[in-house]
Length: 267
Image (cartoon, rainbow, N blue to C red; front, top):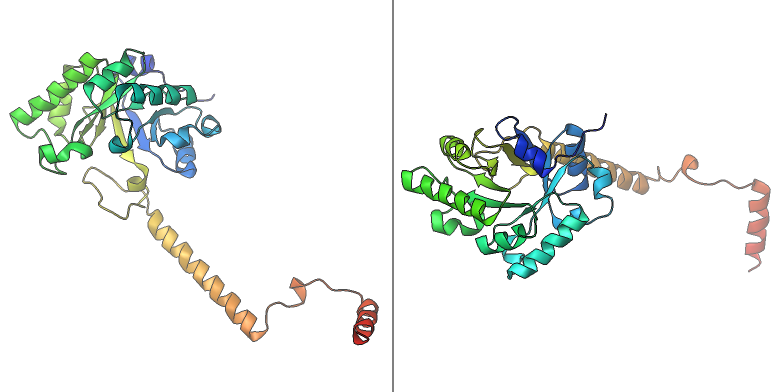
């Protein structure tokens, strides 16, 4: 029996009862693997979601597109038009780290919005850079107050990133928001990682909360070595005359070729 794609109502009903899994996928192979592996949700680039075959590849995945904040529309109405396009294309919710007013504008149109609290990369200069947020009483309360503002704005959920697990757990007791935990511990309603970290293809900074389950970078390097070796063998065979040989060319009847040569000799 095919797995049913979760709805917002399903996700809300499962709060505190089920831990969802979410993966950031940016290639079709990653997306297909997420579907086959039983991942529940995916964060995807908007352009991928808009491809007609998206739901053929990912029929059961709860899909959440998001725009990089500073390349996103500036006005709330522009963001709303973008969100409408995403929902029409098959999104189940949209990620938005813009203002609470923008979130409220979309929520009023019944668009499920997931915001962002804790370590927010776009705004991390305000919290001291790329480091944990919520390690003090005041900082933890700021995370909670931001959740309250999202809830008041009508958001469906928030990504809660790199906060102490105790903070996530306590906030979860005081909010109906769907908490997508990225480095926020098991107190959230969903555990979220990037495919590049899980697969070992990330060549940049690997965050502390990430866990590598495969070494595809090593496999790709090994495959590249095989490619280079094969190409070198081809070069050597061409230079030695070993390629092309009889099995790799088309033969013609000897009589036809003799006649062809005689004609060419008269040219």
